[in-house]
Length: 207
Image (cartoon, rainbow, N blue to C red; front, side, top):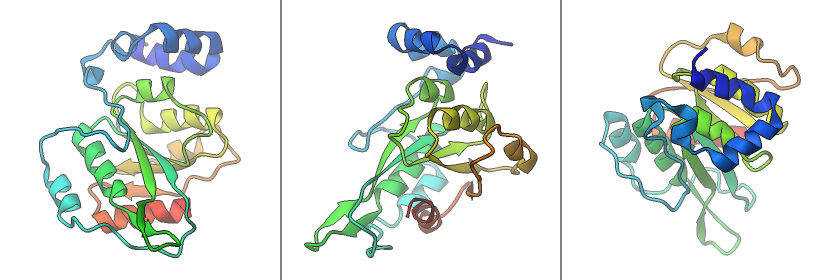
């Protein structure tokens, strides 16, 4: 077992170790891998430059904010994106942050606040239980795949909703084996997805 996998698997088994990791180790020390040298955690107001991809161009082609679901209550939902493909993660964040609705006074406001990580190890170490409403997690990631990551996250947060993302095939057997019998995982997003589909699927899960 390499250092990344061991550090990841030990996080929940030893709470003191997790606190120590949070306090004393940065992402580079924890991951010790070039795959995570450029890990990114963002807030909705930050700006990240990246090379445009066809998927990003498709997602941002319509610059008008989405108005779907204006009948929803005036609430803001917290979404966590974990995807080792940085361009893909940025594109998904851009799509979700374009979703607006009107409040009771007719003013538009952003419905989804998005936090993004390109390192699954760092995402777990810095995970805030009972803060996020939904996690969008890529299945195929190095060191830690999406199934393993979700199993760890759902042990930390009983209420968080999960959407799996993949450009390949979904391993339903692996999902059934996730050691969390009280939660049903039924949200799957095929990448690349259109902007409208992505927003509608996330909104369905959240509201």
